[in-house]
Structures are given as C-alpha cells and as structure tokens.
Amino acid sequence: MFTLPQKDFRAPTTCLGPTCTQDQGSGHGDDLEGECSRKLDQKLPELRGVGDPAMISSDTSYLSSRGRMIKWFWDSAEEGYRTYHMDEYDEDKNPSGIINLGTSENKLCCDLLSRRLSQSDMQRVEPSLLQYADWRGHLFLREEVARFLSFYCKSPVPLRPENVVVLNGGASLFSALATVLCEAGEAFLIPTPYYGAITQHVCLYGNVRLAYVHLDSKGVKVKGLILISPQNPLGDVYSPEELQEYLAFAKRHRLHVIVDEVYMLSVFEESVGYRSVLSLERLPDPQRTHVMWATSKDFGMSGLRFGTLYTENRDVATAVASLCRYHSLSGLVQYQMAQLLRDHDWINQVYLPENHARLKAAHTYVSEELRALGIPFLSRGAGFFIWADLRKYLPKGTFEEEMLLWRRFLDNKVLLSFGKAFECKEPGWFRFIFSDQAHRLCLGMQRVRQVLAGKSQVAEDPPPSQSQEPSDRRR
Ligand SMILES: Cc1ncc(COP(=O)(O)O)c(C=O)c1O
Image (cartoon, rainbow, N blue to C red; front, side):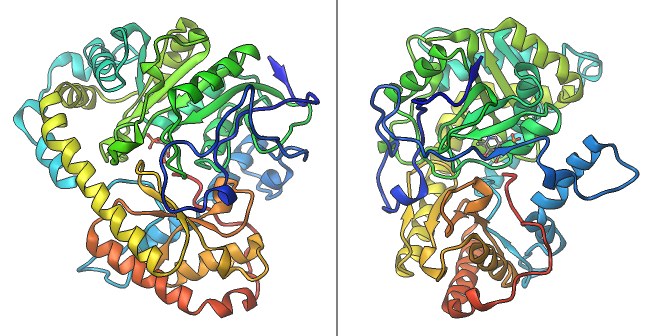
C-alpha cells in the first residue's frame, strides 16, 4: 500500500499536451531518469470517483445514493454520444446526420471481418456451448487466448491458459480489477491525458478513484498504476526500458500495475517498434502485473464484447472470474472467438496487412487535412486517433471555450472528443478518430473546416444552458 503525498514523491508521467505539439515522431515522448524525470506539479490532486459532491447533487427519490452516483455518470458523460445516436449520419437515409470522429472504433475492416465471421467454421452449436461454463471462460478459448497472446505479444515463454480469464470487454475488466484490488475510496495512479471512461469503469462498482499523475495527491491510498500502450488518446507506446522502469517503480511501492494493451495490433507504422509487456524477459513483480487485451479495437469489434485478462496471480484471476458471472460471454461467441484467434494465417496474411494499410491511408488523409489548416498535432503511428492542438481557436484559452468549440462542431454535425474528457491539463486539445471510411472522413473534415472558418464567434457565444459539462469520455 502506498499513500501520497510524500514530499519527494515522483511518478512517471506520459507525454502531456503542451510538450507534444509536433506532428510526427515515434515512441514515447518523455525520457525517464531514475524514478521519474519530470517534476510533478505541486498542486492538490484531482480525484475522480465516489464522493465527488457534484455526482450526487441531482436528487431522485427512486434511487439510492449509489444509484444516483451511477446515474450521474450516464447523465454527464455521454451527451455527445447520445446526441450522435439520435442523429447518426447515413449516406442514404440521413446524409445531414452527425459524423462521428469521436468514438474510438475501427470501422475500416467490417468487410473482412464479416466475411471471416460468416464462414462455416464459425457456426457450431453443441450442448456444452449452451450450458453454464467455467466463469473464467471455456478452456478451449483460454487455451487459444494463451497461444494468441504468446505469439502476438512475443512472450519469451508460452503463456498459460490457467492465467487467462475472458469476459465481455476491457471496460468490464477495469471494473472487475478495481473492485477486487482496491478498497472503496482507494485510487489508481494514471498518467494524463488518458482514456477518460476509466474514471467510470473503476468507480461504478468498485468505488475506486483515479489520481492523475500530473499531480501530487493528498492522503488517498494509491493501490495501483494504470499503463495504456499504445496509449489513448496520444498513441504513445512505452519502450521496454520505460516499461521496466514503471514496473520497478510499482514494485518498490507494492503497487499493482494494470497494463492495457487493447491497441497492440493497431500499430500501423513499423518504425514504432511496439513491445508488449508480456514480451519482457522478466516482470519485476508478476503477482502484481495484470495485462488486458480485447478484440474491440484490434479487430474492430467493439460491439461483440470480448476482453481478456492475463495475470499470474491466482487470487486476482479467481476473484475476477467470480465477477464474470455477470460479465461472461455466451458459449457461441466464445466458440467464434477461439476460431478467430487460432486462424493465424488469416490474421497475418489478410487481416493485419489490410487493416494496417487502411489505417495508414486514413491517418494520412486526416493528417494532411490538419496540416492544410495549420493545426499542429501529435501523430504516433499507433491507434485510431490524432491529438490535435486547437488552442489557437480559443482566444482566452479556457475550458469553457473548449466546450463551446466542441458544441459548435456538434451543431455542425461532427462529433469530436475534447481534451477535458481525457483530463488534459490544458484547454484546446481535441482527439480526432480517423479509422473510418473515406467518404465519412471527408465530410467530417469538411464540417470541421467550416466551423474553424467561423472561429471568431466561438468565444463570444453565451454559455450553454446546461450546467453539466458534456463529455465523450467513454471510449
Ligand atoms: C485504452 C482503452 N482501454 C479499454 C477500452 C474499452 O474497451 P472495450 O470496448 O473492450 O470495453 C477502450 C475503449 O475505448 C480504450 O480506449
């Protein structure tokens, strides 16, 4: 257990907005020296989670305080997404609908996936698939996951099926791990900006908070560290040396480390040199290192809901498996996933090369559009996102202006994610998702251009009537 602050506490940080304005580069933005190269701000922490007064202010007699907190997340965190679903763009049926450049999904390979998932080897119905199974997942699937991760993570030794738990997606896994690793009110450290929905994942069931690494903390017990590589929204990947330093840091403080590698096969620039934590010769603290992967991003199947945990810690695996009673996959889907993951020929020869080529082309298109607009951006060759610096469109440089600009995009029928949703320290950063079909990207960028051309009005607009801050912090 580790309690902050200690006077000279240092924790590693990932690349923050202001230091990352170049539009190219590879690898992780910061070098670590010793415990950490970067001095942390001397501010009090921003903790997110249960107990934030804002969460429980809306009263309803139908709900418990816990229910109100849970509802608060829904009300406040998904405005952009809800608006989008009421008016989704469709080329034929709703051409003036909203283009979604805000949700981190890969829509580039639906054709390949639907062909593969429609083949005859995917269709099997047998009694065992229709009955209750081991909550960790059927053994045939856990064996396949272990083989898959051993191969694609380049593990020095074969990974073991007994260390695998499968469940319905990365979000559930965050939720389960937070619940089984922490007491209510404890926290995980997380470098910012980060995939903001984790706030919700760790809080809803587990009542666990996040302590942002750009800050010191006050008296909250930190139980673990969350590392995402490739990172969302920055696309950064950690080098083996950086991974070792983070893991050694965590070991010194007896912290759990959750390593989220859900974008590991979405590295489309070879020069990036991505390395999975499971490829390391030796983990400093294997009992406290827990790796997650899912098909949501790397196989563009966020609607299918498949995720997996790899941990050598039997207690953690068993506790998570116990929660899988509420988060398991149907037997039929488990069967399909095993068939998919075992088909290395298709993955290596068809899917990955095509997926990477399409990601690269889409990335090039959006990068060029941004360059033409004179917008600096961070581009790492991994993931589905470009982290763009729109600070010049905020005359006063405030988060209110950032929100107004976001609304203006939405009003002009293009959904983006703004930096505040990722707890970016500095107003003016936006995440653009580029992993979509060319015609949608083209129309989306056209709408972005229109808004930016009318930029002078942004700061003068009256504040919106809603008191809550909108967010697309889910994905
Ligand atoms: C870094 C990261 N981890 C986990 C998830 C959640 O994935 P899933 O859809 O499998 O729940 C996301 C979704 O955006 C993500 O970006």
